[in-house]
Figure 1 (cartoon, rainbow, N blue to C red):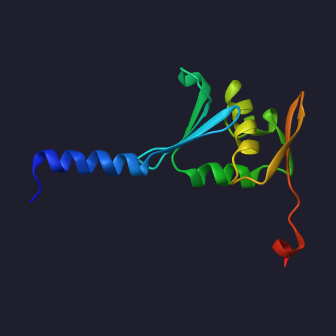
Figure 2: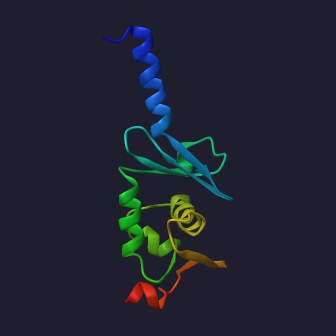
Length: 121
């Protein structure tokens, strides 16, 4: 049986291991201990500059449903409003798990890269 102090240290160690925050140029993404994934404006201090997904897979599903070229308005059709739409476009272009690039700043527009021949086969 663990002592109370050892159990607290173990809990804190597990929480740290399950939490990962990656900062990019304009955005940051955080995997939380509860399994949720938070996209936020880098160095933001208000919830108005963040979007919480139940799981990272939910963000992946949103990305997969987007057309090859998308902008904040397109992302907004999935229920996101205001600055969160722009935040998501930027995050998707910055995070290495999403193969897309920023193609226009006005309006903020991203394009998924075409799959290579090896990925198609």
